[in-house]
Length: 285
Image (cartoon, rainbow, N blue to C red; front, top):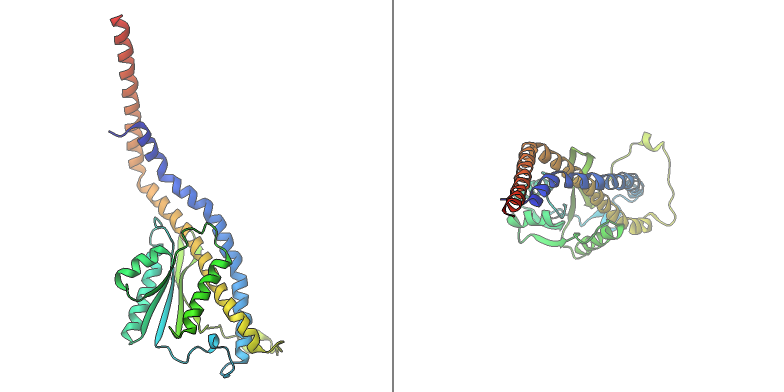
């Protein structure tokens, strides 16, 4: 029979993780929303500069790519923990579908995993194709340096000609009940094309030269996009965990009521037993 302490723990634990997730969600959501304008503006600026050197041999290699698309690196960002519903599985499913489609076309696929949960799922089907794992379990608060380190490793693989195209997979946060698995090509980057009306016919001059600016900004943009993905993932994770724990709490309502009733009966039985022992001792005297 479970002790009174065990019964109290079972009753209280069903809502504990939901409250923790709700508390962390507010900070994670604020961080993700704050990162969006900077990342979007960075892409816009780079898109305008990149348009001026499109097709030029002097364009940075990160911008023009290798000229092929035979080797693909899938940068899959997931969480370090579970108990969050289909959050991790949805990201991995999107990456797995892309990998299967590319393999069917005769392409070579490699995986760069950020997060233990994604790694654990992918290694079952693609154990020999995982080239790197970044474990962030010891990181309490995500900083730009964490993303910069990942970006440096990706660029190092690109410089070694380990891949031609790199695609980033993460979950974009929309709301507590809606997280959107997203794939974004980051090497070579794909910038949204702006119409002439959107640019108001403006002509831009760059100082220093556009190639020099791109050489400095492209690696930073890669880190910025990865950082945004990590922040979006964090907010999506806590939203999914909060929703999953809320569903679990609702589904456990009957169990909680049964445990509470059993707890009260057990407590009453112990009190009655103690009273009987006291009365019996008093009568024996």
